[in-house]
Image 1 (cartoon, protein in one colour):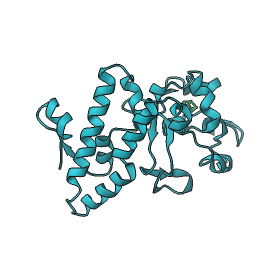
Image 2 (cartoon, rainbow, N blue to C red):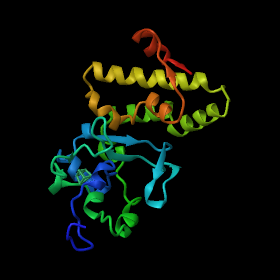
Image 3 (cartoon, rainbow, N blue to C red):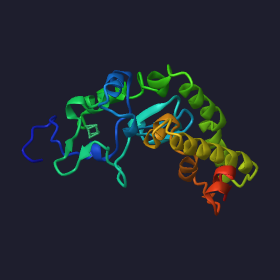
Length: 225
Ligand code: SF4
């Protein structure tokens, strides 16, 4: 094994290639200081299904927000991973999970994995107006409801199509509006509002047919196929 002693990080990059870490309260200062820009983060909202890798890979509903470091475009690797040197672009400022992960002994990461996770409210909950907007989006595009409706749809129940279409339309129109008027950078929306409803539906096996015009799509959200 390259002559390295057991229990030593060989900096092979395997863990960084499997995706970015979830953030914890201990990482808040890194976000506030700009080492982890909002544009490099996204949110898995409460109720979305997540694979619980630490306890065997079962799909479970997220009990609360999980703010994660994004993957690099077209890749599963963490956006801060530098493949040419198997390095980390923010090594000295890397988040808690990266600092405690020992691939040869996962006891500590298992202990900390679900504890004191950082949520959107910890970062932007104090910004009146912006937080109201996040709360309203969560109410109208409730992730748990979305998962339930998608599950029923996969079982042949077509009853929730209008509600799902409404969620897609509201979500798309809100994102387009915020990005267009410059209130929120487009690259920050996946942190602020979570991943687009249309993308979540695709991961749940429900496709959204695109309408022919952008205007129609914003108005109707597209048709649920
Ligand atoms: S932040 Fe750095 S150490 Fe952590 S997963 Fe990304 S590249 Fe690896």
